[in-house]
Length: 456
Image (cartoon, rainbow, N blue to C red):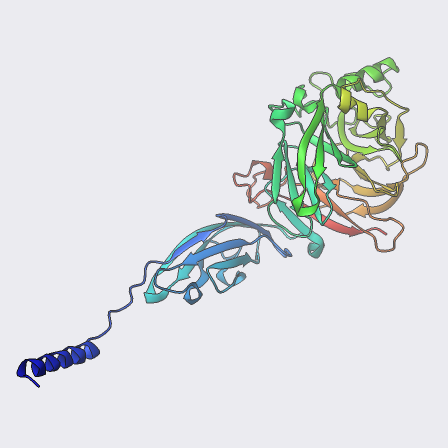
């Protein structure tokens, strides 16, 4: 072995030993990241299945499963304390749920703690409404507070209208939360203001929607409220889609002309006069729409006002439009059949819905525009003029909102049949701050309530 070769081996050995004894470079962890699927969340005291928020976290140099997520602070523990928040999941995506302790607002600090002692936070603005009767049967439809009509689309989903906007929203009927899809056909209809959608009825793959046809609350005529339009349904359930059909914007005029020609029996001309508020006992306000038994052409128009006669204890008014299909298909002037007067115990029509077997449910409530302490009731009916409706349930009052919509009619001959109703919460002070729900600034805090009732 040469001297040079021996020296080379010794140098290599020295380098090897040095490499084995030099400490490894320490791992550097980045600042954790955290994002919320929504910055605002609503719940209810005693709520079942309240909406949740998705929390997405990460940290460079660390596996997401090593990160912890929790609410570290609450601005108002009487509404929701840190112990009232549950975070589930172990990866990059977690689910955060809040069990409301009391009514009101609270800012919740959501904190992710990563490796290396580093952390990050986001604020979740939470609002809790009061407890309601039978909370296990209640769900909350967020995104709007003024639900006014609903149609079942199969697969556990329903499309819900709003009387403060022209947006139609698709909801999962079994869950609380935001709509899975929305549609707004205002531009196709030519509406620049709210249509005040109040009634809906489905025939085959066509849904008919009607505005209230009345003046606004100040007694002023608004042309967009004098609108009936159709949408076509394709698909079912979560995959359902709506497309615009046609519209007709003279049904109110046709009704007034018909009543005038028949001796002003119901006072439609006076009820629609300038200065006349719609929700008066002698006002003019449509809230129900459904088709007559076995018919795809005759539609029943159910009135919230007037009563017939327009005195306390009067009967609820239903006017048949005998050519509703042609009214929408060709723009034909509406023709009317013999009016139907229903004894609903002095209440008027807030919704009317029929099932495939020809069984009807009439949701009855006051004609007045007041709070939710007035009585509400459900009546069964066979849809035949001259046949009396039968009360099947008095509905609970006192909770926020007024009962407004029947989603679908079950088989009323089956014991234990259950029906789902939806409230209009627009005028309700949900969170105890004096702000009406329709005026809340965040759509996540706006909500209507659905509830199931056993009637069979």
